[in-house]
Image (spheres, each protein chain N blue to C red):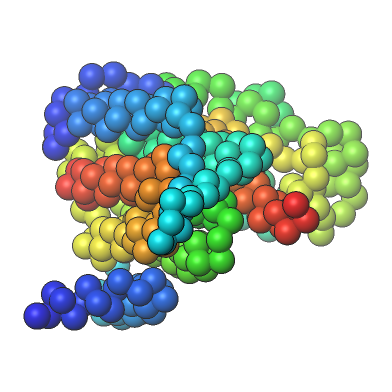
Length: 217
Length: 149
């Protein structure tokens, strides 16, 4: 077996979907877990605007409902990320990645500002478009090899066409586009912190994982 | 210089969507050029279409509570797959016995055919799919209700 992420340490079977932990996927899983716990215990940052030419400043309050929603979305994103890190099935991986994309849309969209909402809308369109190549890739893997299990594909008995790998990467790129929008909407500090960190982290993690998947299958 | 130009274009988030759409279009063209792809005959979960069956095209065969053959990837992980795949509630059974044209209706209502690919061998997929829907509903509901607050 092609062991790009190290020898599997532990298998968790859900029928045909076998979740496996290698040193690589376990590291990514723990990273997502630790950040989800951070999000769970952290409080939102308050934005301070300073008026020029005087000592005046005003602090923006973040309402409880907004806090709750963003925390919920960040935790959901963390859970989706954990799933995407360890799953051993190509179709399950694409599902988890699209769940990460939807959660990122929610995190960005929860900020009350027209500028940020526009960014969320644009990102939503990209995430929506990204699902098409991603699921096309999963369908092509199933049709050309007859299986979806990464563990079976890693044995090298069937070759996955280059087109399917390229489509998978393109789709994950679309889903992982969130940091572009979050950064441009200037929400890394006050309006979105600290929950928006989950956007960047989840995008980074799904990129790392898709690299492993591409090399494995 | 060229990096500066690219970064100037990408720094406006209104431009990312056209760039991504162009990348998707270019990729589709490349994929079309690599066609035809080979089709593997040895597929998981095969299903044949039985013309005379009233459950067509969802019939996976076999009487209920005897194990139907489901060619799964790891049969050891789902030893009970195939037992209830042909089970119908009395109403569904009545419909299926009296007409040949209600297959989709039987599948689409509770107590119709339980496709064990969805609920047993690939159950985790079926859990993640509604999760995506629920999260999407949560986002949409939050955005809709926010206007009232």
